[in-house]
Image 1 (cartoon, one colour):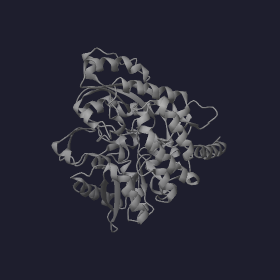
Image 2 (tube, one colour; image 1 turned 90 degrees about the vertical axis):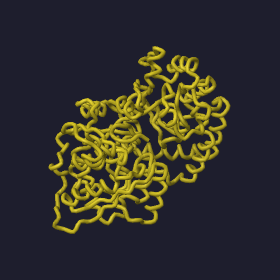
Image 3 (cartoon, helix red, strand yellow; image 1 turned 120 degrees about the horizontal axis):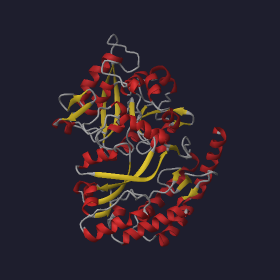
Image 4 (cartoon, rainbow, N blue to C red; image 1 turned 120 degrees about the vertical axis):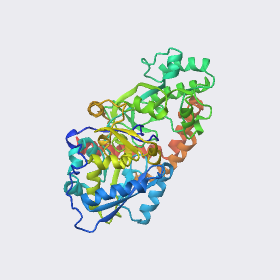
Length: 488
């Protein structure tokens, strides 16, 4: 998972509304209550590797928020791999917490909203979150409703998701390889072949066990083989393993695996970080944002270039890729909303939370441009997870029109067919648990090309059906048809 504004998260970036990019003295759009009342302490749980200077930074945050809204803030970070499980246990136990990070991929937003882990915030947004409503593209709040209600505030970031092929430029230059005509998985082959023949220590196509080939479908549940075609007219949910697009992709992946283009241990690799750190790879696939090549280049320390591998599509998971919710256990929901409103509209607070203390962790180059200082290693935060990315300072390599380009990127995104539809799995929870077990048996091996799809795909389909996949698809189709009827 990438870090800091210089780096790219799983689903990162934002929409620009310059009129609301307030200065340190400008306030955050919520009613300032000063210090006349006894301040309350807000407990904020968020994802990311715990940082040495978090408490030090939160002391500065609290000085500011105490004056602005009569509240102090205590942030607790929980590491990436532990976050979901720990938050689930804490929420179930009724542990005190006010603000929590949630998303489509960590501490599942829809599932936990339906479980009652979060407060509905529609009224709170009207009373104390006016700045958020004015700042966010309406698609964020509309697309993140669960059963007609908002339970979380999406980070103001890139709205669509677009896949790209990401290249290690040093090998493109060394062998004079043209990447500009690459789009499909199959079009990679000549480049992969050149590297395999000439650079035995370099991985031509870098991937790990979480990889799945891109196919033009909108998943009902991320990672399970049930989806609707992006160009659908009938909104029929199909088993992805039975589609011609996935069949072709899996055959190509197996061809590449047999040719040695893919790591032999890909199906069991938890990440490709070591390969990236060493720079011993030619190409991988990533989700992009405007000027992502600059971020990747700075983060990895060597030149990166990219080219599209898909259209730019607004999915549920991209809208819900980073959110802050108010816990149902919160003692101070109104103060929590006031803080979130400030965090998403106040430039000083947003950059303090993101980059730390000016003169300690970073220095200003100009009004909205910063350089990291050595101490920044003690406060290296995942920018995308902390609210309105549009308010964060630029790096010296960023163009001045960075946020305007984000606006164009967001405007160009096409809605996915399932945008706004959230499958209620309660009627098929047993079947989903069984299907997940089948996925563990087959998915990574198939998706990474490790096994022959002509042999293993039929076996996987048979086991998925025996586990109840058809029943899940039938229930999802019923709900989808009802949702479409209600929203047409």
